[in-house]
Length: 248
Image 1 (tube, rainbow, N blue to C red):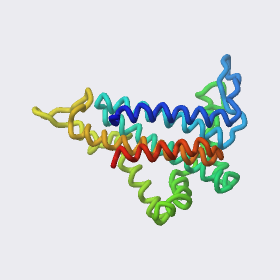
Image 2 (tube, one colour):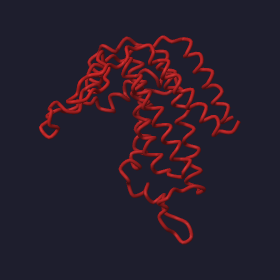
Image 3 (cartoon, rainbow, N blue to C red):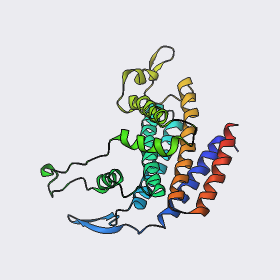
């Protein structure tokens, strides 16, 4: 089986995992918003937040893979920056449940901000809503304390590693010059604005997408542990082992 087939099957598997975890939480309810109805998780539990984040993770991974296949590696890398934060958030919330920390002020502040509506007025122009986001450095520091010792690293090393990844991919999000210039080349040299399929840069990003599929599976593993779903956790562990063999 080639790697593209593995990716396609893993995307299906990850979607099934999210659906399975979604069955363990109270479903969203229709809530009136102006003249319409919107779906919301009214309980606003950490489990529901994890499911929402995982659904977005799988969707974003689909999109990044689609962009890669069409040579749009700048845009792929932008979405990988999104994936970095989503995967951190799932680990942050999962570790909070596993460690019994989910009632602490840090997790409560995070959940309040996550579930907060965007506007507090019928007229968006008059809205005074402010989303009190937990600083990313605090999320990473918490994960580092819980996770990095397992990997044989000191917590400070884990934080530095997360910062390095964030800084690298933020250049794609903010369209920094060094990242844009990856689009320039060829004979005659020019900006490649219809994708960079077949180039050296494309091959590099093909290798990089592997890491995001792997991290997607391991993120699901943390979530399954938080949900005390041992059956699903076992399935994911088996899948992770098989996936790792594609790099051996």
